[in-house]
Image 1 (cartoon, rainbow, N blue to C red):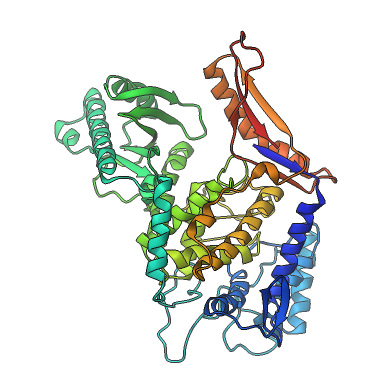
Image 2 (cartoon, rainbow, N blue to C red; image 1 turned 90 degrees about the vertical axis):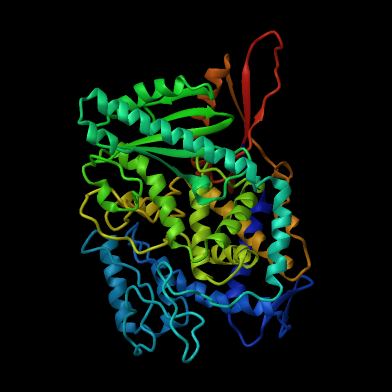
Length: 572
């Protein structure tokens, strides 16, 4: 559902939040804290408040970090460049002469002359006054004299290496207890059932590939070792799937097995299985897929044919050389597994990552900001934001990481991209996210870049309104988790669903109807994919300050009981 608001309250709230963020960033002689709605000088901070206060300057430096920086060439506007150059204490040491040269290069780039200029990502610790910041470096956070330098996790050193506080294990246990009624954890029996189902499907894949090999008169010794494998990705592979969630899988086959055979002979083999229901092939999709329900579990199976004669059991899909000589559909199919495996490889503690991600995904769903197709973030984007938080606070437990997640991304300077690792150059000539080369990439509002080659922006659907809604939710989440860590609130408060229909003055109702259930499913899918275009049109209206899409849809009441009709309501 979507919502359009023309009320002054929303704009005032956003302006107030921005103003408070600026005030919070100022470091003055007086310490400022909120007390009774008033700003009080020299008020005493809690330990938690001091930790947040210490993190913020590091976050302001961190926003200059991305090693794949955005060229500022749009429209000749240099205000953002100046604000970045002048931001943070370290940047004030940049000499006037270098600043003038940098701005001249920005101006030339904006006019289409010369090479695009790249933003600095930090400066040499102890660098001389008047020199330019060195690219790709950042002052170490929380470093103490004589301490060993931490291993880099992602693009930078950690913001904090602090060990968990004495109260953190208890807070984390309370978080787990709060999550359990929401069904985010699956029982051991159900997990074993999923494992058995995947084993059966994996055996079917191997059996099918052997049959294809025999039909092509390949040597028997070759057929016995031809292999084939079913990989998983998405929430199941990350270990954060919920009760009743579907499974995303990938069928990997050797070079002599064609895609057409996957959608004919393998489809037919699945059709013969008693446990398989609701089997359908979507061969013309952007990422072709077979959908089915196997023993009550919904499964989506993609297909990728590798340029290998056999598929070994220990195949690592993160190997970039596997992408050589593949068609684009196979590369797209492989991307889900490669991104998921990279995320797990790049986090310092998988258990802490998983519990934090479960909490953040539940929070996003409760607050109606979990939908890639409608311009919010999908599962992989939330996973990458949580993974980046884990990199910045590698020793923190889940209760702290949830709080730090809101701190980091309420302060993040969008549209600076979020990256989990240094983008690597490859000679495969595949299209990657790179604003230095692709003009369209410069207009992405909230880029979160996948860590596996070819790197892509997973949030290209985000609009001005959806980004504004998410940032406001980050700020509210930060305030709530601050109370929780101070024992002034319970974790349940974080997952309280806001009242969407009391939030705005004006709403637009969008009704999608079709005469049959099958046509209705197809029609609703098309309508959902176009709602973000409608939101973009509403944002251009000078009288609309915010167009908020509610991902929740509702079945519409029947107006004519004698007429067979299926309808869904969305709200703008």
